[in-house]
Length: 345
Image 1 (tube, one colour):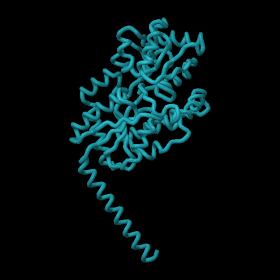
Image 2: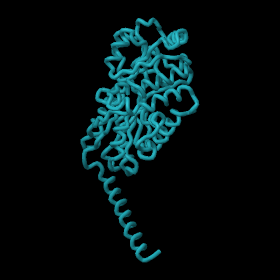
Image 3: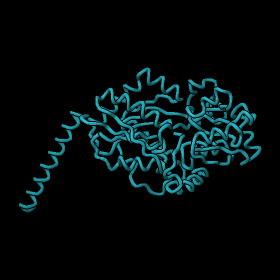
Image 4: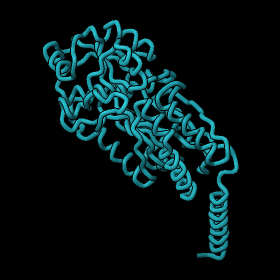
């Protein structure tokens, strides 16, 4: 090594030490300015309700405003890109749902690396779908629905919030496991789905409880089963798919927070601990129950491992029929979903 190279190495080494010291100081004093919580969906969705609940409580806990920035479109890619391009300083974080792990399986390429470019903060809860049908259809339980679908292949429709959405994949996964065929009818809004479902223009939907609970309680719709690992408190008499027709079946939309990679661990841990205290609050638990959300908390390392496992679960076997079919549709998501408002997750 020449003298010049030694000088350069020493200079850049000092710069690195200085940057690390500055990051440590910033982490110690964090937060000193407003925090932006980026959201991949439109206002009024279940994910948006979760985001605003946590934004309010984070504001109170951290002493700095936490604002929600809705960036819907392209299956969450627009929001994710906005966060990836932001400084890794804890002042821009992203609330993600299961779509975050689904996108690597459905897009032929992504403008970021889901595992490398984000660091997990915490998982806070999950919301199973409720399999719902019109009263007019005449089925009383999920077993009767599956039997009808087998007697009349492809004659029953199901409504989703769009190609590549959680409601779409939930149905695809269920149909593959149940050995049935349902005709997909994508919609753009909850209101359209509910109107057509009540009038039997479509025969089923796989939606979060928050969007069908009112109609179920009013007797306009029939809830057949929930897709989570356990029954929902708000629909305690509705069984799970696992305890009825497909043992071990589980498909829920989970919610969690991530930050740009290289966000200082002290900041990530502070946010995780704050989120955990919020999840444990009785008011949060009550709000979750009312929305059909089950509290489920994971700290950064556990949540990071869970995201990896979910990505693997989305593509357990590239030869499976449901995966090949879904992958084919997934190639079209970027153009067909860009700018759409989704309501299911």
